[in-house]
Length: 413
Ligand code: NIG
Ligand code: FE
Image (cartoon, rainbow, N blue to C red; front, side, top):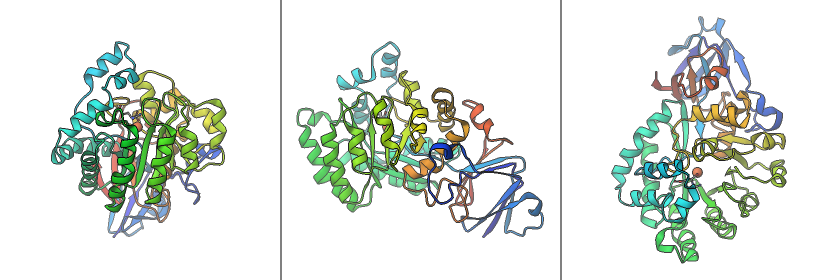
């Protein structure tokens, strides 16, 4: 099946010339091609040809995208989309001045959502999450990472991972599953942290690996959650089973998470709002992606991660929504892109690479997704704009016209 997506105004390729990520000065290069068309064969990108040749081109199907701009399908590489319940009441308290960590310490926060998830069946969970995934697709997202982390016991963590697996089967996009059993300590293990770490290492991880229920193992390294020693143990066990690693770290405190994640060659370290100056250079020669989550800084009203400093220090930067019920209740990757520009001073080009090729790298998919390159999956986000800057300049407005996955139009505005 040969298809031609023709008459485009701009093709933003995000081509990394086979490297699989962009850092430093290269992060500003989006590989722009104007007045061209994209040839797709059997779901893969076959060629990029000038618009003036598209008339004569014979294909099974020709899709007119006159005047539009095409990007690689957007990749949200950090979300907690699999949750039940609402924390609107805690949101009210936060607005009145109660700190996020304060709410967590008295048993609210993540544990409020754990309660809701434990009281929701697998079937109901899937139904609750479905419209959220549909909303991501309507924004141009073709690869979506989703974490567990609101079950915090064997039965419920597995239930969440099953829900994510079912969603991946239902939807045409790629849903990447991450096990986040080490999100916080459940009430049953409040005074027995080593008992919970043992449960993760000896029961949850082996079962998840054996049944292919996740690709990544994540954790939350903070003074209110797991110590770096506990993460070290969990990561060693996870890596042995072939799970790849990610870590929530330097969100509120510096408790050694960054060094442990780098030691284990984690695919990404996420948050970094309170990253210390002396740690900037640690990314220089590292292939661990720094995933920045500006929605959290907006939602909790505190400092943004030092994006410019990280870019100056050659870090590989990605951006994601961190969509979750407590710290970033923002299901809108395009809004997050604008936020990254306005609040973290990232150039529009840097932002686009951060939600495409670099986000693909954070999910270990840089060889198949994240750029418009011959041989890669034909995953595209098409926008009704003649210049890519409009996408980020139009803050909070969705100008998407088509979401295309493996060469198929899966959403049209
Ligand atoms: O990435 N930091 C920990 N986990 C989430 C928040 C989860 C929640 O509050 O429900 C985050 O910010
Ligand atoms: Fe998170």
